[in-house]
Length: 442
Image 1: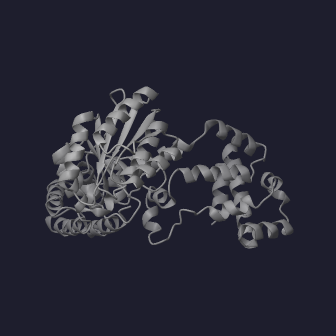
Image 2 (image 1 turned 180 degrees about the vertical axis):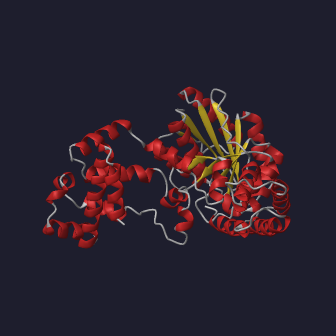
Image 3 (image 1 turned 90 degrees about the vertical axis):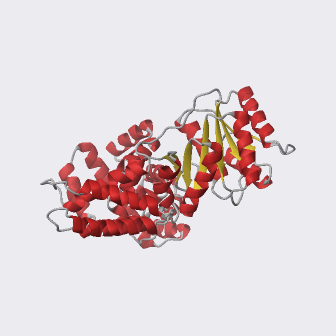
C-alpha cells in the first residue's frame, strides 16, 4: 500500500539528517522532494503546493526539542498535515432510519458491487445489523448475478427483479421487501458506466430523490489516481454524497486519490477495501493511514484485527493444553486459520513499524502458510495430537503426501517444538529463558 510514495517521502525527509537545526535552506530542499513525491503519486499540483507551503510555515522558526532531531520534527509536521489533508478524524456511517438506506454509486469497474457485499458483511458482523442487498443495475445481468453470489457467500438476502427495467421502482420495492423481512439496513447497488455520462447521472439522481437514503456513498478505484478525484467531484455535484469508499488499496496504489479526494470534494473517506475477501474492509482512519504512508506502520489496526479473531473460550482451552503439554498440530492449525482471517500477509506486515521497509521487494505470498497446512493435513489424527510419534518413516510419508521435502517437515517440527516451549515459558513467567531461546532460534 503506497510503497512508492512511502519510499520517496522517506528519502526526501532524510535530507535533514545530521542538521542541528531546521533552516530555510534544508527545509526548502526537503519540501522540494516531498512535493515531487506527492506529484509522482498523482496528487493534484495545487494541493501538493499548498501542502508543502503549510509544512514550511510550521517548520520554520520552530526550535528543535533536545530529544528530537530535525528530521523527526519534520516527519511529525508532515504526518500531522497528511492526517488533516485526508480528513483528520475517522467518520462513522449514518445508520439512522428504519430501515437505514445506503445508496452505492460509482463507475463500472470500481468494485461497487463487491464492496456492497463487503459493507453488508461488515454491518452484519461488526454492527449486529440485518442487511438486505438490492440489485438496481438493470443494464448488466451479470451484476445482478454477481450480487446474488456475494449475498449467498456472506449469508445476506438479495432483492432483485429481472423483469423490471425501472431502477427507481426496484429500489422502492427493495426497501418495502426489507421492511417485510425485518431488515434494518438496505444497501442499494446501482448501475455504473465506463465514464460519467448524462443518462447515468440523471438515473442515480432520480433514485436518490425517490428513496431519500440516510447515506450515499461514492465507490472509487484508488488505482486511478487523479481521475478518481475528478470523477468524485462530478458525482458530488449531482448527488452531494456523504462519503467516499476507496477500493483496491491492496494493489499498486499511487496514493493520489486517498490524499487529494477530501480536499477536492470536502467529503470524508469512510471505508477502504484492502483485498478480495469479504472481510477485507476497514474503517478509514486518516491518522493511521498517514503513519503507514510515512513507514510508521499501523499497530492499532493490527491489534484490532487480532482482537476480532480472538476467541476467549478457545484461548482458555489452549492455555490448559499448553500447561499439560498437550498443545498439538490441530491447535496450531487453528491459530493459522485465525491469522489468515486477519487479512492478506503483505497488508498485515505493512502494519508493523519498519517491517514494510525491511521486507521491501520481497514477494510475500498470501498463501504463506500453504506448505505448513499441507504438511499438517498429511498427518494422521494421532500424529497431529502427539508429534513425538513422528519417526523417519512417518516423516517420509508426510513429505510425500504434502508435496514437500523431509527437510521441510523437520523444519516445521523444530519450529513447532520451539514455539511450544516458548508458550509454556510465557505461561510460567519464564521471561529470561524465553529470551535466550528466541536468540538461539536465529
